Amino acid sequence: MNPVKTVLVVDDDPDLTEIMCNRVAQAGYSILKAKNGKEGLEVALAKHPDLILLDVMMPEVSGLDMLKSLRNDPWGKQAHIFMLTSVNRSKEMTESMNYNVDKYIIKADIDYQKLVADIKQYLQ
Image (cartoon, rainbow, N blue to C red; front, side, top):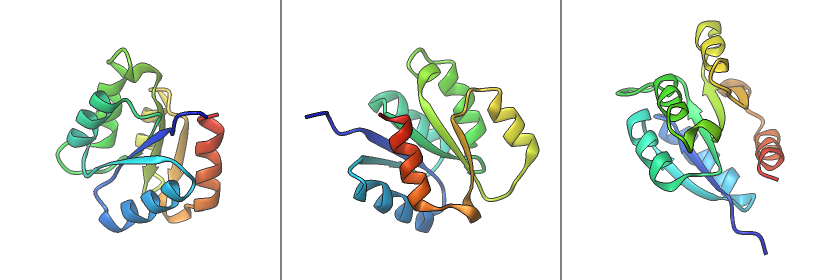
């Protein structure tokens, strides 16, 4: 049997985090959580999750800054990352795409079935 894959959810919105974690866990994945980019970076580098759902706008360390730090790490260079944002801000979207992001998801448009299907596709 294959080992259970792990997804790290990094978001400062506790309600959205809970919903995402529940949906992803129901699909059979192990879940890690972080409430900001500083905590998310620490968890990611310590635990090496198989995929990271990363909010762009957060206190302390933004998702974009966490992404940049991850890409400077030997493990983090290859990490699968889906960026999450509440607004369609082309500046952050364009900049994050320079750091090899797998997907960009607008929070207001999240289709959780599609999100889980996308996670499965990336973690096959």
